[in-house]
Image (cartoon, rainbow, N blue to C red; front, side, top):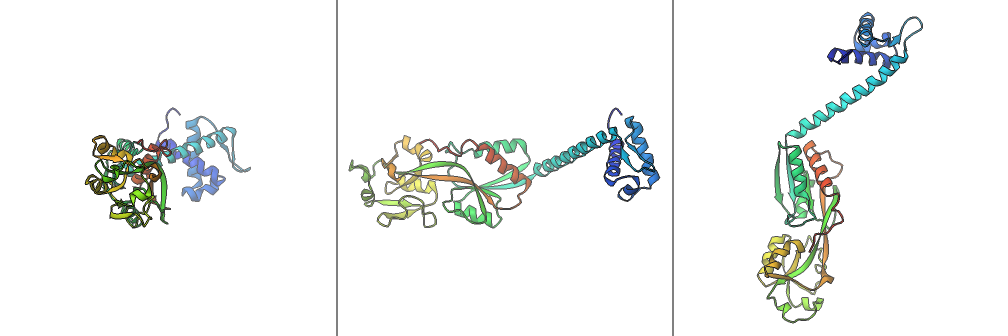
Length: 307
């Protein structure tokens, strides 16, 4: 037999069924064929292969040595065909689709964030999948995930919620900043909790009490924002002191608009996670994007964006 064709596959499948049934007679029901038809087709297969595969007669059904080897090869062949069909189905299912990716704000300037790399690779592999992306705070993303409105998001949740799975991707350092002409800089004194208490601060809000100053009642939290850009506007006004990610604040720091306070004792780290519903079946497209995001960050989980 030079090349395997569809007829050969059918005959090989018949052979496997006979072997696993224990003989010609027992295979009749599974194959829905008369025993004489089965015997004829088995003879055709042996002729095409040029070897005797089994012994049948009064002593019962028994594979020859060649038959044992061909049966083992058939098992491998049909397993490979099954794997091929599964891969084709996966490609077919992921080739088209739609994904909504929910992001927390201001990740693009974080060098440890490799979401762009993951999206690039995913789009290369699956160019027909369409995207929707949006910016929300972590609490909103978590609620949308639990409600089934999105399949995956990037969050920086300080309290992880039941029903969600959090996969750490990267981290960033946040420091206290203020405008360059802010009064706290005029004293030329070390920054302390006492000196901060004399000035208006921007907090993260009641649902995000994560900064070292959030739960201190002695400081003046006269403004709040979960959004980094809104916080930047407040700091640039010259009226407030507040936290920004170092990588995000750099552009205004280099322009001389804001300055990082020399108070590393008040710095803190924010950890970002790929967040998905726990024990949930995702679409094939979403599963592939999840894999791409995890793979893109496999070397950054311990890194912090450079200040």
